[in-house]
Length: 269
Image (cartoon, one colour):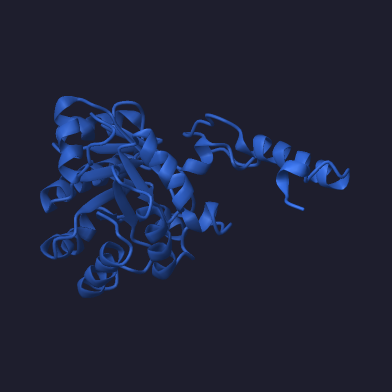
């Protein structure tokens, strides 16, 4: 597909049908979103993971709707081609349907997102249906759902037990029937992800769910190696910006302290 042709929710479905793998990464600001969009990434997620990688929190639970609208606006300003999706943060959609639709609508209307993503299985179908009735495209998210970390007791693989695997499979089919255009499968056994991918007609986007999903998503900061003290098992560090940036800053400090910067070309007398 041309890097200049706009990606939509229909494009995602067409990719699944053709067998073309879908590529997604997170972004939270203008400069990184600009790089991703120009690189030809299919989808950009403004994730509530910003609470952790941008704000430095231990979980995604503290990020607010206002925070998410701000980050989505920043990314929207850069995106011309990629499908822009924004996460619904904690406590913005499970209270009641009217509140959920209003909050999702703000991410579309004020933030500039083309779609929203929300966590949850078959139990969130009525909320999804209400959003779709309001013409808000929805991406599902099942398996490990980080907003449920306190309820489930930590971050670990979901779907190992027969009962949990059955719930995840039921949920995938229920979300498809409700009308979501794609589903994120997070941290579930690869075999289970493969089964779900083959049994539903909408794309699955994996993160820690094996190679058979219709696409993959990772957190940008993990891919670029921003943090030296943390690397998720399911992620891959494609470069080490922590070392690269640190080296550049150390060079700057050294040159300023030694009087090597600024040079004549850097200023006017």
